[in-house]
Image 1: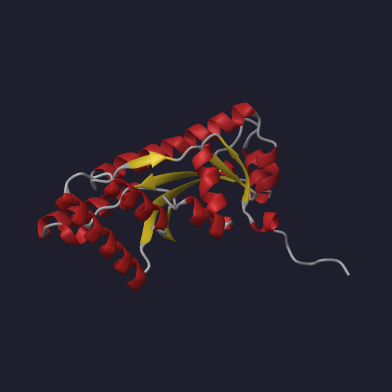
Image 2 (image 1 turned 90 degrees about the vertical axis):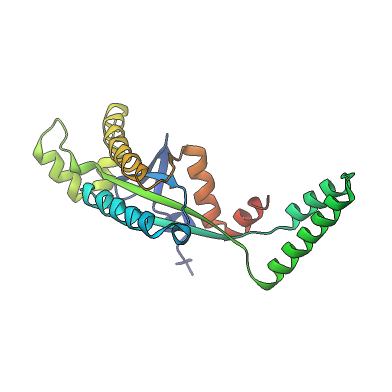
Length: 212
């Protein structure tokens, strides 16, 4: 009897990663921007209002869809506590040793009561190849819309660079729009993209790698 269970590869929407661009099986392209976090609750009322207004302006300035993604991972602190204990043992100041020991005790108790999570924030910027007609005219553009995956496979290096530049222009709009919110942004490169998606589809291994 044939195995009808789909393989993991069939469930992954990514066809390949070229430079800093995700090429999806549906023929579209993605850039992923990592965004820093801010503690909104600790800001003053005027600062909170300013952040909200700037975010509204940012959203209104974008004429293409965006996807905001948050990845949460449980942090395992065993290795961190081990390094802290080694550093503590080398201290000459007894007061510092006592403080370090109390700190490690606090971290152990905290981790036993709740899961300590790390959160990373990303903005996924899309671009569809058939959004921009090729030199062959509007009929080629329609054909690309009806069969985007086939169109993507036919991209030459020159076409890829053209579409990548348009995707990067969209990313630059994101960079500029988030500056007013006090956020730091950076475009993820190929190796970082590989690591993220490997961790997503291999959660046990991915969690182990984050033990720092």
